[in-house]
Picture 1: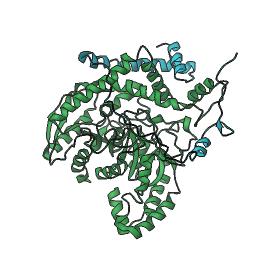
Picture 2: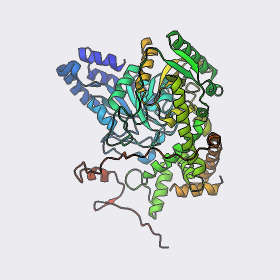
Picture 3: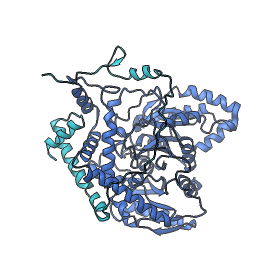
Length: 471
Length: 96
C-alpha cells in the first residue's frame, strides 16, 4: 500500500493508524528474523498509533500529511532517546540525545517511527554486509544483498513492513539499494535537506532521502523533510538555484560512452527498453558526452575518505561510545578506535589520512576537488542542451552475498551514482524492469534520472509520468 | 605501501592496528591509490588548480538559543567515564 492510499483510508476511516502499525509490526515479526532489516523495533509505536487514530476522527482530511504512517529510519539518523549505532560497534550503546531536524519534521507531520534500520558501518559500503550487527538480506531473493549502505531501509520497504523508510546517500546509498530492491529512491539536491542530526560521513556529499514504492510518496516525504534549517549552514533557499521548470515532455540525454564497459548486458537491455518507453511517451532521447563522469569514481575515492577521516575523528572513546581502557589518553584513543571500527571504516580513514597528509595533499585532495569543479562545469554545459540525464542506477542487479570482496570491485557498483554526489545535483532511481540471471530470475533493476541543481521537482514529475502511472 | 607505512598512518589516525590487519590494509590501500591515480588525467589536461569556493558568510549569529545546562545531564550520561560532573581522561604526558 502506498502512503497516498493509506492516507485516503485513514481519512475515510476504513483503515486506521492502529491497523497500519499493527500490520507493520506483524510483518517485522514474521520476516525480519530472516531479512534483518531492523536493528531496533519500537513496539511503543502502538501508543502513538492509538493517538493518531483518535486525531483522524477529530481532524479528518485536515490532519498532518503523514499522520499515522509507519516509517523506518536508517540508524545513522538521530532519534532522541533511541539507540543510534551507525551500524558500528563503537556506538553500540549510544543513545541519541536529540532529534535530527528531519526527524523533528517527520514527527511534526505525524509519521510514526516503528524502528531503526541496518546499514553498512557509518554508511560505508554498497551491500549492507559491512554492518557490525550482521548483514541484511534482499527480500526479493534472500541469497542476495539488498544494496547499501541504506540496505536495511530498502529491505524494510521491500518486505512490506513500512511504506517509506529514510536513508542517506553519500555516493549512491539510497539509489543503489532502491534499484536492487525494486523501489523508488531519491537523493535531493545537495543542501535541500538538513544534515543536522545525521552522522557525518562525507559532509560535502551526504543527503537524506526517502525509499518508497511510488514516486508520489517520495515527493510527499521529501516535501516534509526539505527546507532551510538554522542548524545546518549548507541548507539552501528555494531561490538558491535558478528555477528548473516542469515541461510536458523532456529532452533526455544518455551518456552512452559511460556505459560501454562493466554494465551487465541484461541491465543495458532493460535500459534501452526504458529509453524506448520514454520515446513512445513523446520525450526526446539524445546522446550526450560526459567524459569526466567516467573518472568521477576516482575523485570520489579521494575526497570522500578525506572527509571521512576528519568526520570520524570525533569517535574518541571519551565523550560517548565505546571506550577501551589504556595507560595514557593516546592509548585510549587508539584502542577504542582500533576495536570499535570495522575493516572498511579503517581502510577509508587510513586512505583519507594519507591523501590529506602533507606532501600528498596537492597530488590527491587538491586534484580531486579540482576534478569535482570540472565535472560540475561539464554537467552544467550538458544541461544547456538537455533537461535530464539518464543512466542505469547500478551496473548489475543485486548480487549474491559474499561474491564481491575486492574493495575496488565493490566501489564500481557506484559508478553511475557517485558523479551525482560529486556535483551536488539531484537524482532519482525508479524501477525500470526485471532481469534474468544465472541462479536468479525477476531481479529488479532501476533507472536513474539526474536533473540540474534545484531540479528535484522535475525528477518527481518525470518519475510519476513514467512509473506511478503503471502502479 | 608497506607495513611500516600503514602503522604510521594508523598512528596519525589514532587507530591501533594489529600486524595481521596491517598486511591486508596495506594491500587494499595500495590498490585504491592505484585506482584513484586517474584523477591526474582529469586535471592535467585542463591545468586546473585548487579552487576556493564562493566566499560568503553562511554562519548564523553566535547566540545562545537554549537554557545553559539544559543538555548537560543527557550528554554526560553518554560519557564512558565521568567524575564529579566532569569527563575523566587518562594522563596525557608519559613520564617514563
